[in-house]
Image 1 (cartoon, rainbow, N blue to C red):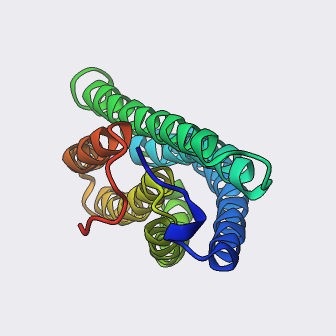
Image 2 (image 1 turned 135 degrees about the vertical axis):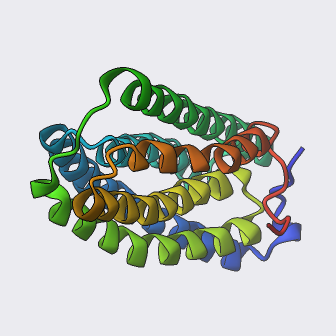
Length: 221
């Protein structure tokens, strides 16, 4: 059982970390709402699997952030017992872990559909906008994820670590997104975005399993 006893972490410092974690979560909610809507609309318009997967990842990260918000607000309220906070932490970590598995399933199904059935050709007229979305995510997501991982370690929160993994995934997908769209745009490699997206699966599966088991967030990668 994860300990949230004040003796393990000075009360004032933990309170500050909780408030900072809440701020990061609110930033994530706003960011993912805008990013997800833009990616899904452009992905549908351009028939780009990578843009659609990027948008779906944003939707899943919205769910993850909402679960994390619930977990953080329970402790930040100051009225919950340490036992109840611990219970909420484990439930939140499992829910976020399952959301990572949902992303794995989506990537497999959508990539398989694009490669084997539809063989969809991306409309390169929308590639520039997609690449721009990728650039913004590539710059911002690693920074956001880094702060989340540091606070997760101080709070000993597997749920926050798993949510940080969602941000890491978003940053990784942004690189895949830019490379895939650029290759399609310049070389007409219509299949590359589907293949590239599959590279995420081992990383996502490992982190999803760790979150569901609620392993200590303090382990190093």
